[in-house]
Length: 525
Ligand SMILES: C[S@@+](CC[C@H](N)C(=O)[O-])C[C@H]1O[C@@H](n2cnc3c(N)ncnc32)[C@H](O)[C@@H]1O
Image (cartoon, rainbow, N blue to C red):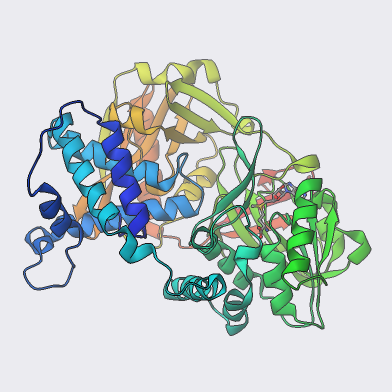
C-alpha cells in the first residue's frame, strides 16, 4: 500500500513511525529476529521468485490499489490529512480488524520503522556531494514520473518541466521535497487552512497541457504563489511570448517576483491584485490560466480573452467543494465558452471579490457534510441524521479500478436536482469507530432530502473492481435509497466519461444551469 501510494523509502519509514507512536507501550520485551523478518517482508520484490508476496496475490494487488487511490485523492487535495497520516490510520485499522493486540501492533510497527532507519543511509544519500547535481537528478526523476503517468501530451510542456529549477521557488523545503510529486503548502491562514501552495506537479502539467499554449502567445496566470507555474509558462511561450501573473497577497507577489528573477525568468510580469479583475494593462490574452478554485467566471476574463482564446480554470461547481479544471474555448458568439472535458482536482479557493465561503453541516464528532446553500439544506434536521439506524443496499453496479468513473459524483450533483448533493467528510477516528465509511473515490458523494441522507459505499467485487452500494439514515431513507439507486443505475447504463460544460456570460439567460453572479454554468452529459 505504501509503495502503491508512491512513498519513497524515508516516507515509508515515517508512516511506520507514526503507527508505532499511536500504539506506544511501556512493555518492551526483546523480540529477536523480528526486525529481520519484518524487513524481509518490507523489501520483498513483487516479481522475485519465492517472494512472500506471491502467497496472497489478491491482497498485494488490493493494497497496492488502495495506496494508488489514496495518493490520487491526496494529489487532488481531497484528503483532510496528509497522505502519510491517512496511510498510518489505514494500517492501524487493518491491524485492529485482524485482531492484533495494541502492544504487538507497536512492536511490528517499531520493527518496520527500524528497518527503514537502519537502511536510511543507503537511499537518502545524494548521488554526489553537489547540490546542483542532486537538483538536476531530482528534476529529471520528477519529469520521468509525470511522463510515466501519461500526463505529458506535448514535448514543450515536458521540456519546461525538465528546465524549471523548482527548488529555487521553494526555498523553505529541501530539494527532495521540492521535486516530490506532491503539492507543497507555502502559506496558511490563522486557522491553519492552506491559502497558498505549489500545486501537485502532475496537476500543473495536466493543466498546462489543457491550456494548449504555443510559443509567442500572451498568457495571464491568476494565482502566482511560488511563481513555478509562471516560469513553466515562460518556458513554453519562449522569448517571443509574454506571461503576466496576478497574486492577491503582497508577500506572495514579492516572493514570486524574487524567485522568478533569481531563476532567470525576470521577463514575467508579476502583479499584486485581485485576479477576478484580470490584468487589463497586459490584455488581451490568448490564454488565461487560473490556479485557485473559482466560484464564478467574472466579466474581466471574458473581456480580456481574445475570441477563440482558451481559459483553463478550476471551477467550484458545487458549494460542497466539487471542483473541476475546465478548459473553456471561447465560442465565436463571444457570449459562451465550452469545455469538452474536465479534470478532477482540489485547489485553495479564490479570495477577494470571487470569495465564496464553504457550507458544512456537522453530523457528529469528526463527521461533516459539505453542502451548497443553493440546494436549501435543512441544517438542523441533517445534524441529527446519523442518530437514525442505517439501512443499506448493494446495487449490482460494478466499477473497475481503472474505469473512467471519476465524474460519478458530478453526475449525481447535476442530475438529481430535486435532491441536495453533499460530500460526507469522515475523519479517520470516526471512520475507524464505524460512524460512516463513504467511498473515498468520490469523496463522500451523498444525496439528502430534508433530514435524510444516503451516501455511496463500495465493496470489492473482484481483484480489479468494486461494487457500488448505498447506506442511508433518516426518516426517508428507504425512498432516498431508491432515488440514489436509480441515479447510479442510469449512470451505469450510460457510463458518461466526460461532461460538457458551457459557461454563459449572461447569468440570467434562459437556460437551466448553475447560477452564479456573473455567469451561468450548464453541465451536459
Ligand atoms: C494553489 S496556489 C497557485 C500555485 C501557483 N500557480 C504556483 O505555481 O505555485 C493559489 C494562489 O492563488 C492566490 N489567490 C487566491 N485568490 C486570488 C485572487 N483573487 N487573485 C489572485 N490570486 C489569488 C493564493 O494567494 C495562492 O497563492
